[in-house]
Length: 288
Image 1 (tube, rainbow, N blue to C red):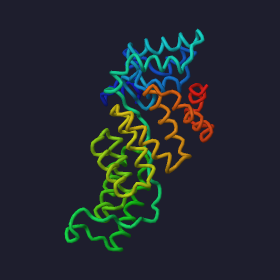
Image 2: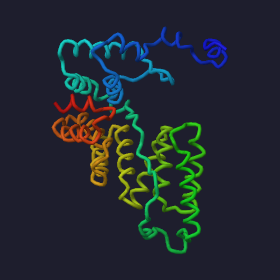
Image 3: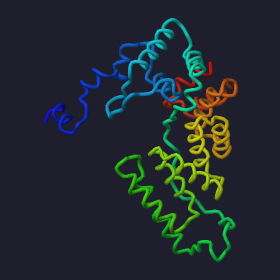
Image 4: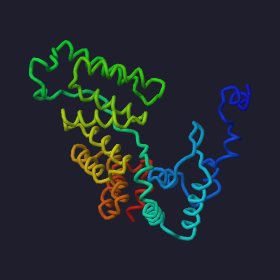
């Protein structure tokens, strides 16, 4: 079956139809040679441009964003600093960014269980608090491991993983690792209220998981609450100073707050920790 026929049967626009309506990133990069792919992705992360459509093959932009991309390309070609251009664009559209911005970062996931701290004193009377025996705790950990083994980012497996994390939490309501990973699934579905509640509960039970602080920072960032986001990123770095993504997104947050000097150490730290990272060239530009 030809691709165009498959798209017609499934009701999906063909690549040619999309290109008639929108501009694909790969075409824009071929046209505007002064821009790199990470430049365009960074403009997306900062909310300066917003993709009109995403497919497995490409990202598509409408005309207003194409005009912004062309403007950035032309000014870089004339010797302008990408860093200065981004700061100018963020400043000119700051009001909108506070309401129309999504960080689009993969949340940090708890990979393996670690020895649990003593359970906190329950808020409810002892007779009403959940009783967790060693057998329930062991089964909860088994459900966590099963969920974690299929929780690999594949959207088709998310509900199965979420169900296993929920079962683990039924057996052990204090299993913070399961709480964080379940919150990540809610976050991936744009269910920010549910994700935020789970991250906050996880931190309340055990504040030593850097993943919960980092991921909560992402939510605050999405909501335009940058001061709270940077506080969360700072806390995640206190717990795990070598987590490159936390340095990167803390630097981004400071830039959006107009605190470029505060961002500098984190741009440099990202380069040192992730010399081959996705954003290392940008980090070099912003730390010059």
